[in-house]
Image (cartoon, rainbow, N blue to C red):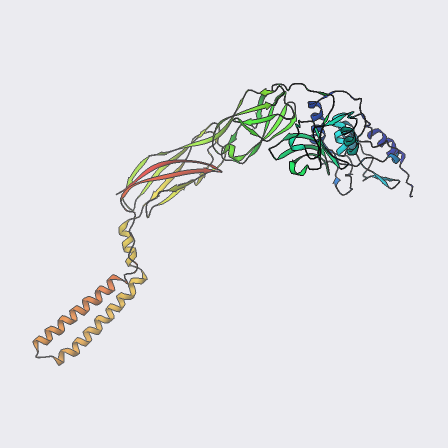
Length: 491
């Protein structure tokens, strides 16, 4: 077996940092358990030197901000650095900012001593405040044996029917374990766990937990949750019709399973601390303007609902001036379309469309789009009608009417030529001359009619017909739409 020499400076530094070796067993509240987990998942950190995770493949660079402790395997008994040592958050944060050099671990007796971090059972051991690191098989053996630190809430595969509460755990033999965070829906739960590459929250389907056993820490302080207090929201307002956003809720007495409600409906909530929550507000919640109420709910035991803070979502109202205009066909009518912000400043662009236009009528807006802001804004709408007379003339002057006109003239001159020759052969016969003359007149009339009438397949279109028309003007900004109706009278 190869022998390795560990640099003394590293050994001393590692002895200082890899120092979590358990705690004095004592009663703990669920809030304390969850607060430890959230800290190891959400607190930011940045290394001063290059750090690599357990498999050496994932690299963490100096000066970059990360969230979630690095996943590592336990340190070997043979390393001389302590049996199965792990880092709690304070040790990790201290050591990761004071690394002696860039490295990815030092080999010792063919075992890689990994850098600062944790693994799944170390994470659970620290959150539960166990007297020493318990690996997954240790946790399983205790829960199903002496029950010194935990006891089962059901059999293996029984997570769906177990009375799991935040801070309980699910353990899979000697393979994996994690804290139960909350139930997301009838099929899914959220975990708090240390897993490659970093500590994180994960969604688990109950169907994926067939090999996991639900367990609970002993000596829990089952205190009542406080009533939450909400003081402010950030952002304080948004413009209607925009994209979904993250709402930051500030206050006090929040707990890890607090829920933010938007107008009485639960929204996906992330616990940051006892004074801060974040909620995901989808675009559908701000598709229309208004004043919406944000509240926070702490679940039982105890708990309750906070007072509401109003969250304005700005919208617009639209009116036309004048509401009605009268023109002759071929003339234009101009309207002023006014947009007035409601529930605060409207800071997004709105564009315009028209529906219900009569035949031959066109619409134009100037400007084509506007950002109202906090004041009334307007655009000029021009409706242009078409004259029937100008349409008819345009229809007969095109190339299609030119061909039959030329053909008619050719036939006319050919008829005159034939008449001049035929005339000599019927001289002295008055009846025949009159018959021939009548025939020539009919032929000329027929040819002239053909040349004037075109081919009969493309009749000319008319202009804007007289009538009273109700036209809808719509303003659009993202998913937000407002409208007004105006009248156009065409004579």
